[in-house]
Length: 172
Image (cartoon, rainbow, N blue to C red):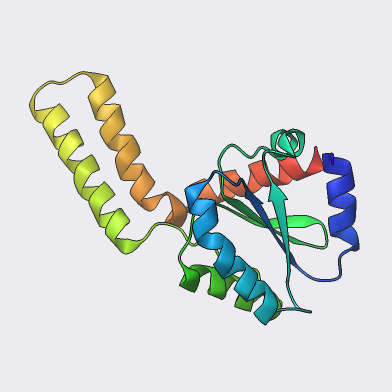
């Protein structure tokens, strides 16, 4: 299936669609598959689940810019409204399905509090060490990137930039 055919099918679908790009050899895919299928049954008639095997549809994955699995992409009337890479806990997936069923756009699950604190600490330590020991710019930049990864999902500039890029990608 190519991107044009895929998007045409999505546009004709009357419900929001959660598309799960997975592979049979992918451990995280196997972990979320039963949860997604259970939620699909619970929200039948309100939210649809499409499961697409990445191994069988590599061209489509390339056209959609998917570089890791599992990837969940949520569409409403053919428009992408959310993209999430990696396994998510059942609570986050349930929240996503509930929001879609109520007509709301779900929010990206983002970084957990524990991950956020760890990244802030590790990035801060690297930056502090680099500044106090006249370390090279690479170590300083690495610390800055780790710090940014702790807050990127809350940064309004990052959100504006990613929304702009998503809009351009869907028009292409």
